[in-house]
Image (cartoon, rainbow, N blue to C red; front, side, top):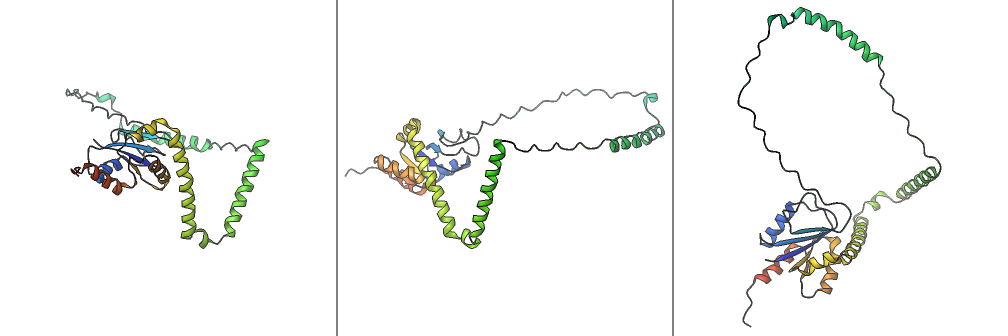
Length: 236
């Protein structure tokens, strides 16, 4: 049975791993995941292991569905109501007419409670609030100095995305190196797959260190590697 290790910095849904097996052409493949963020739901029944190396917690196992309650089959006999226990309709209408004005008066007399005023910061907290306010004001002024067309242009968005991916990629790789359990999982893999931009740096470094294990970017490249593993070896 082949084993694939997925390197990911994105939130993956449980259904994604069904798609992985379909794309790799092997429903019985063993999947181990090294994730920076936790999956969107419980995945213990989808993967062999999911090692979370970033912030957050793994989703809790869903509670089992309660068993249906079986109602008793014996029906209770109809209750017999004495005629004198039934109130006269005219009496009921008269009572409601007397109670309604009294209830309305009580509702008007009780005013709604006012919310307590929020206490103002004092001492060191007041200084911190003032510094934060000035920082927000400075950012707004700096943002207004740049034309909107420049701030929303494709090159600026690309550079911001590249910088964020680079910072995350280095942090992700450092966390992989610091975890012996992660390195042990990678050592057992037949193919290692970097799934996104944040995992590329870790994949590239693993490819330099582990020449015997294919490290690829994306599932199509992983499929080619598994097809080569399944191919019969020639007599040469």
